[in-house]
Amino acid sequence: MINAIILFLSAVLPAIFILKNSGFSSKQLQLSLVFAGSYLFSVTVIHLIPDLFLSGLDPFNLGLYILIGFFIQKILENFTSGVEHGHIHHHENRSYPVAYLLIALGIHSFLEGSIMTNSLHDHHLADSVYAHGSSSKILLGIVMHKIPAAFALMALLVARYKSKKKAMVLLLIFALSSPLGLFFSEYLSHAQILPKDYIIIFFAVVIGGFLQISTTIFFESDPHHKLNWQRLIITISGAALAVGVQLSF
Image 1 (cartoon, rainbow, N blue to C red):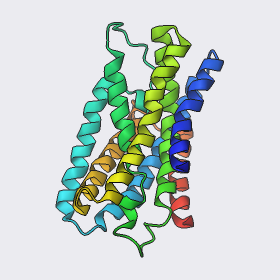
Image 2 (spheres, one colour):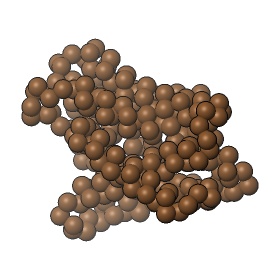
Image 3 (cartoon, helix red, strand yellow):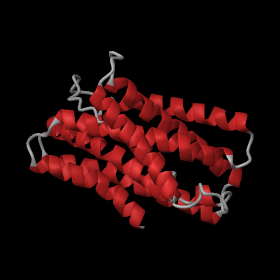
Image 4 (spheres, one colour):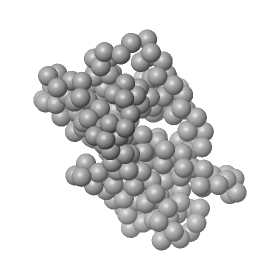
């Protein structure tokens, strides 16, 4: 329950900040996004993927499901205009249905929350270092990623509707999606509705989405492929935090 509340507040509090403040530093937002992307990528590589491949399923098939998840997230990105990457787009086409954006963001956020359940990790890793504190490690990455996304989404909604109340109501859809994903995966795991292998496959698909999000943040933060020392230091710091968190549990 605590994790669900944290996921909810990580979207709501940034939205409230936007409503109370007429502006914020776009540069700081982008740098925080780089840090979050680095942490998310690193925790995926050093924690989630090793966890996945210790499940005992065919590694080739697991790799295929990761690829499927990668491209599913790529398709969702077509409807979100990169809001989940912290992009603030006041969409040029005013007739563009915000419903599409909210549905795609909702699916993305739902999948993020679904991977939070320890049942996805502990049921096959009871004696492994990867099982302990899994949800806390993942939670930190999701929260850091969700905050810039909430900033971007609220800014877009306020610009589109000129109504703070309506924008806040719509943002609540995004804010509730991750907690719902967490509750859904907990239910599936404990009710044993699906075989264990199906849960692990779902886990692999979500990991693929994490890889797509984090690598896109890297590419877009340096589109000209020039070394930016400030962003490099922030990127290394994000990776170092992921390593430190992994070793501390």
